[in-house]
Image (cartoon, rainbow, N blue to C red; front, top):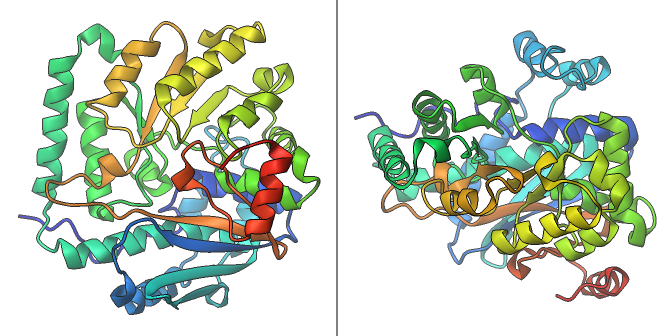
Length: 401
């Protein structure tokens, strides 16, 4: 039986989420001189200190990578991604990740990773570091997992979906892979994407992983992450940071990549500024925390209040989803009321019986030396290093935490 672990953890610079590149282009054009800091956060009680040497070694290998001509042609393909500009492709032709920006160390008995440096040069570290920590840990804790184990769980889900749904309902079920950051392994994610695209071609609509999208000729999916909105808190007036972030996104992509992330400063605050201007400019919102049913109802009501037909919009659900469970329930609840799709992450890319996925994230914490904050709809996902700034921001935005 074939092991779920291959020789390499990160395959190349395309082995990451697509929004890394879309944000990096916008940063290059709009904020090329901004400095940032990221922090690695472990949300579980598992000790990762023993993996520090291997993580350092993998980061060194990552920093030796560069883009090939074929990879650049795929990324900048004008027939599929005309909004990716030639100057950005030339920037990526010369791009290298710099090892001096990354610090892996022990802090208070736990592994810590700190990334400091130019925003445009450090943003590609986030996803690969999470993926390598996840796979290194899995190789040690679950060394005997095979690709057969991955397939077994996948096919069980397929059977469950077919038993629970009708052929008509399957037309509404649109699922994408968002699993890079906490995958069991690269080979496991690759197998999952391959099997999904083969077995459920109408249901499986693409992947956020650019390398896998290239390998299997699938749509690559992604727009913005929380850090895009968080960074603007220190790039202008705090109270206006969300509107500035959305405005700058529209200026960069001119109607392309029109899914807006809603829970950087809570969905309620997001809606307070998501007026007719933004609601008409963006194709729809993405949910990444809170109860998805309540969130969906809230956004449907908001669009109706603005006299916009929700069926003209696409809601992207992406928080802790399972394709054979909550995705089906959400599909039945919202079908014929709004367009929607599902971005399924850890529960798909690290789903083998007996395997407990790592709960890790890497978040922006400082911009130009000053703190930033994330007020999620789920308090466990809140991020801020400075309690004074956190309190000040909560008052400014009118949120509770």
